[in-house]
Image 1 (cartoon, rainbow, N blue to C red):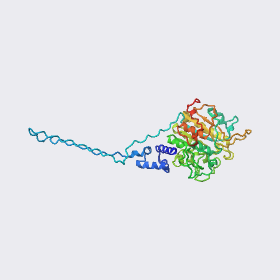
Image 2: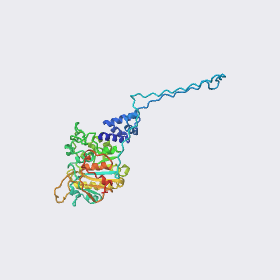
Image 3: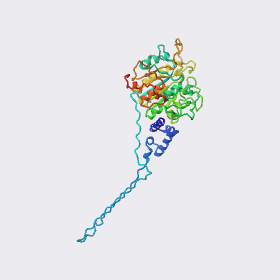
Image 4: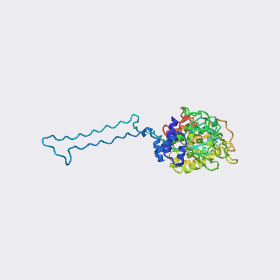
Length: 452
């Protein structure tokens, strides 16, 4: 029911803003899309507002009221009016003709339902004081190499860290990129395919089912349409989202939206180029089939334009560099900076633009997170530190609503990031983000605890 309700809310919200190509994408598939086709045909106008209204009303409201018959006219008295003969003396005056009694209105047929008011629309979720969230996902060189005294990321550790709150207890679910990205946007746990970074773009088997806990059974890379994401939730709540992917181009080398391999195809990214493993949104049919991915999953080059005005900035922005610029080992062209140096340079280029944007300055939150382990430190490397937990990577919150220079040691993971974002926008919890032990940072950020 949660998935169906989510798809219905998304369809109604999206219908109110559909034009041209996006409308065609919306009605391309799924039961929700079929409902949209029927509703559009009923209006006969193609007006998106009418479509949204029809989707939001009960079918019972289509029952027409029973028409009443014409009123019965009464005749004038028979002896009245000019030219009437006078009554004879001594005779009784003629009596007036009685008025005709109206016939009772016919009862409606028993098989015609009575007209009922349409059900009230569900209340829309409301955001708290934070209304713009920016997530930057990198590859970790290790907690100490990122945030320690001998940090190999000077911009992150010495310029950005004093502005925000260090999440020293943040850990990953797996060393690979895909499991953490999928969990952070959809609440789904790692599986065999995602742990291999989905080198083959495989569908879940037809037998895969969405359990009561919101988790899809089986293994695969492209989740069934009923599996919702934070992007689906935001659209259903009348919020906006964008995924910004560095280096995302089509086969001809031109910048393109929502780029992913064909079904069951193997992807071989070029050094320094885009990889779909960095892009969790292309792995959900809920976004692929109804056009949300094609509209909102865009090349990173679009970010500066969207940041120029608060009204053009999405409520939720997920920013992912190429594997090279994220800090992953062995992903860069020969001779170019790699590992921690590449990731730090990416932050130094893009984060100042985010922090200077009107949306961030008004009510923004920046989350710098590591979505994978296995980055490398630049040469010359410092003396090797004792091997620690590779999944312990840390994260950073920067906002005027987060205490600068502070540290929070709460145990957190990608499910916590999803739950925090959902709580900031008043949304339900998806998949394992709804777990009893999953911590949310929203209460502090929203000033609901003494930590404000």
